[in-house]
Length: 543
Ligand SMILES: [Ca+2]
Image 1 (cartoon, rainbow, N blue to C red):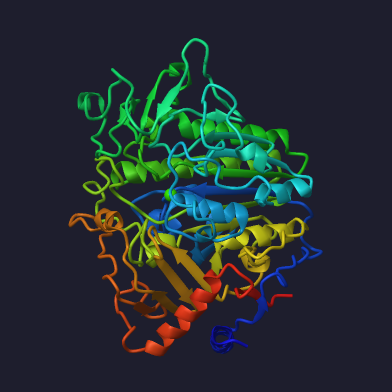
Image 2 (image 1 turned 45 degrees about the vertical axis):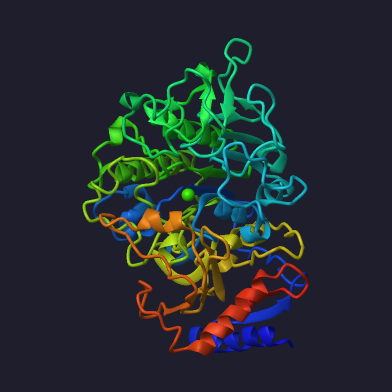
């Protein structure tokens, strides 16, 4: 047993004593066989993942806030389970989404950073990814919502066939915002084609290098904007909002920001109705709470935290629509519904939309520190609600440690499909915990921040942020005086060690007090980050 492996093993033995966790340590490639669903679980349930964007721990009533009414998500939690220690794998969009679909940490793919709007498809169509597993099990599969995992092979002609993309990854149908709502092109992609475009009459041109002559931008025409934007977001203007990048033409295809949520609800509902009599998988990545925040007018003023909160109210409405439909169709007991988010909060992310000024003291990260871009708990510890009538215990609050990277293995176990084997698989089958039927924790959680070698690493109650030099933009985003969740980024070249058992807010650095713990955790983290056959992957002993 090498030194680091020994560290891992010893750590787990201690964890086992203190937290009733049992783990096995296996060399990669050996473990991760799917646990077959227990005989009393309905076979081939429908699965819906509603995945929010930048929605944070304390943005939901059931997680604490009384400033943003979220009755439907609260109800979903009360008739199902809410988790308090569930994590995204990263504190930014693209990497977290990559992990959900592939079962791997994003750092294993060097391109898995926040992608530009014209970036090529990040996931190799040859890989077996989450929708592929559902296809293997005979499910109908659909993607409706925000994508942001790249499209095409390098150069995209938005007037022709745009591929490869979601359809090449196992989705039968897809209707997506290609990147983010704050980037051009501001059009939907329906399958391989831009929805509503007339390429012959009014072709759509897109550039991330320069503006098209004569086209208004946030800089040249600030009077056209509903709220001001920073320089990065001051490109082409659509619906009174300037975006990142430039576009021209394609007028008939431009989306209406205010109508986007209704559109996603309608299309998701249509898919559910069409497949109510056969197993289906719906991945519904919503655009809330990412900027620009342009909720439909029926939601304006519905929260006490300005547009940022109103946007979350709109998301909650959408969740309610889906739940109501499932009830109406009588398929609630055949449907597993999961709600979570891709990263923690950000207030000002490029627009002067009043998020900070109207925050009204709302601390979106709840008891935690930091938010989007950071490796603190606030960056990746997120709402995670699981609802499946008759299976998930009603009203359960689970404190088990869970990571979204485990969705792939856990869901493959649920539907009885073999997880792909390979050196890069990070996903562990934690199905029983995910369904509230056990409290087995993941032994560790890796939290990738925005920046080179910027990681948080939770092992039981210990939390390490190894010495790093986080990018200045991340610090800037969270360091304004007025921001209710403002926090200094780690100091350069300083290790941080916290004990979350009594310091959820990561306020007291214990690194000097426990240097051996720092060394031990660094060694384990290094081992997890290996990509060769020296890598060590723990598996849960939940057979
Ligand atoms: Ca996000």
